[in-house]
Image (cartoon, rainbow, N blue to C red; front, side, top):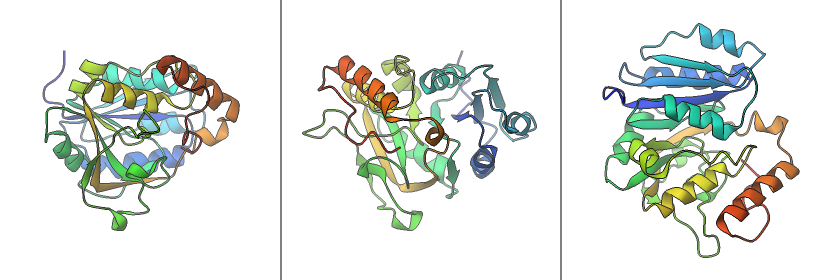
Length: 250
């Protein structure tokens, strides 16, 4: 049963790179209240990440789920989403760093402006797609825009780093498609499902999050992997075969 007192369930996936995980958690910690929760899904780290997580002490509840073997990002996200009790779910990559003290408050405020909002995204650097790409917080547009499909591309180019997902969205759309069992495209797929459901995706131009960009993925992502996931995406949606344009750089 959902605990109504939980505002945001922050979900972080970790796999080594403890130095970045520390930046991510320590920068968001001051924003978390007793009415939020932090859910960490670790994919069998071996570099001190588990030790760091086990000693965390925050003013909000901390839930740690340790996987004994590596699993896909889709499965990991879904574990966190099913575990979370929040009205909102914040997908916070461990290679991100909060640099604005109003980050969560403003994303939540934006999500509450209409009943048909499914996802709110901050602006980031090192992010695929121009719809929410920004070099720094000083460059923010200070507007809230809607991310839609383009005339020549019937899916939204919207990477999942920093998504605030409403519980209404999860209840209406469901969870990430676990057919995407390798890195890539699962977020394009989910964003398309959100739009198809009639819900909106908004880019909040009042919020910037530092994104170091694919720190973990650089170690194992290759063109064959992206091609395989591109085929899953294309077959699911009946599109031209191949990797969707803009997918390569995360």
